[in-house]
Length: 336
Ligand code: PBG
Image (cartoon, rainbow, N blue to C red; front, side):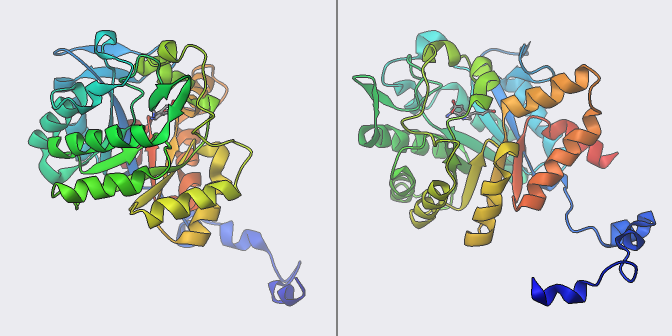
């Protein structure tokens, strides 16, 4: 600290000089958030012209493919960079081994084809790689004697990835937290000529209780039946471990690494940014959305200001992009 005498002190230094007018605040602004930093998660359901509201996420809807395609068009017109699709799989299509994940006619593939046909390369299409939408037990992998087995899960994740890449996914986002899956998926994609698909790995994904509303939205909460994912997702107490996870995923071929949840984990984003100098996506998850939404509805906070501040905070911490259920609304606010 001894060298910091040049910072001066009061009264020579008055920090408020640089805050006196809007123009100087704008001139010295260190971080900006724009629509191009946004990725919008969309829940997809079967049927036509169908929309369903989600009790724990007011303002977020499950959409049939035609409406999801229109929503993607609206997102693109607002300058949002990518959408992330999550399927609500009908219960009768779920099984112990989650095999429906590899069906070229499953909901996610049909939605991907529809959106990529309508929008071409004007918006990124992110498909989640994990088995939880498809398993009857709600876990992200194959369950043997109550334990999610790693290597057999990777085999099916590779098939799922190829399936989604063939449907037109431009970004694959493995959210399952199996060991070694990034390398395996990269090899699998290469072997079928999809070497240009971006892998955005959920590298530091925590076993978080903030995912509650998402699991209700996609209907995996009841499958999971009170179980947790602590044998594969990370302990919220850990930070060094996140650094190892990121290093491994990068060495296996990840193009973008993700931290999830978002706001309670800004310190993790900052560490990854300072150490690895790679693109980082942050996921403002369903529980974070619910906190902002319900507090706004209760009149406790101003929604627009608080949401935009939360998004800016991600950028300040070092995130390149942010997945947010507020994406569409935020892009509209940013344009206004
Ligand atoms: C599933 C997955 C989850 C989320 C994204 N992909 C839930 C989980 O791991 O149980 C959570 C997203 C959110 O809470 O908004 N692999």
